[in-house]
Amino acid sequence: MRCGTVSTLAGNGEEGYADGIGAAARFKEPWAIVVDAQGAIFVSNSENNCLRKWDASNGAVSSLAGDAEEWPGFADWLGSSARFYNPSGMALDTEGHLIVADSSNNCIRKVTTAEGRVTTVAGSGSELSGFADGSALAARFDSPMSITVDGSDNILVADQDNHRIRMIAGKGGRVMTVAGSAERGKEDGTGASARFDQPLHLTQDEQGRLLVLDNVTRGSVRVVEASLAPPQRLAPKVQSVVQDALRMDLQQAARGHGAGRCDVCGGWTALPGAPLRAGGAEPLLLRHVRVRQRHA
Picture 1 (cartoon, rainbow, N blue to C red):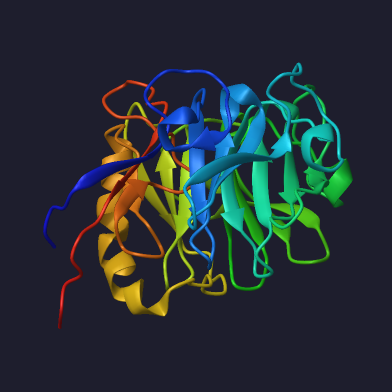
Picture 2 (cartoon, helix red, strand yellow):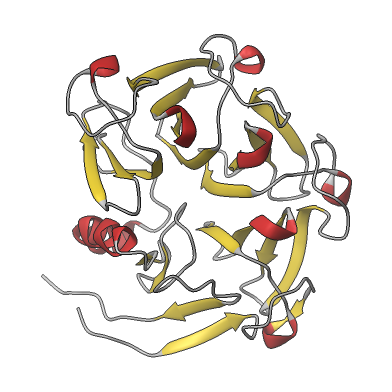
């Protein structure tokens, strides 16, 4: 691996809200990104309470769902009529839809990337936090922060203030606890005997294991042997690069850098589901670094 050239995709370091091309766009605390098969970049714009899209064909930033010019709230609807409250972690499901941790609404949302139609997958959709497993809409979360989706459309959630890893099972939508309990800590164990301390980020490796960033201030990386279906990869030609860099990505995030690799081209960008921060600052732009792939 070699270092490459850093370029700015959108934003100019000034906070705000504006759609536009390149430096004309504005963000306020962009939190997480995902990249689809066409190279479009989707951003959870947390403090603007909306989701943004960067178009790979022309570099234009547009708002996909939510309205930064309205108060935060909760509403399932289309485009700017939908409401979020601090959307955070995101992932793509097997059909290419966005699955979003709507953190301050304590729920998990689904957003179609073609038209920005928002529906609630699980949780109460209110500021009232809590804990409950069971049917999707009866389940309760407390500041869900990060999302990953396996190859069977099981949604894994870092339920931060419940100190648990939760799963929304496939199309059926029942919510269950994979590991952790109400008692915070750092003990290893099985299921409820394990302890977490505000898990912030999670991702999945090719063996179906979960890798969890547990309490970013301590920087612990935990492994959950979950036997999940391997996640889909958008660009098979960079699989080996992404896999080789997985632990490095999490170590970077644990140090607060939030760095990771673009699933499409292998370039360094923000780690999906992790804060877009570096050294404690809050960057207000999207950056991209192209690197050369290693050859066997």
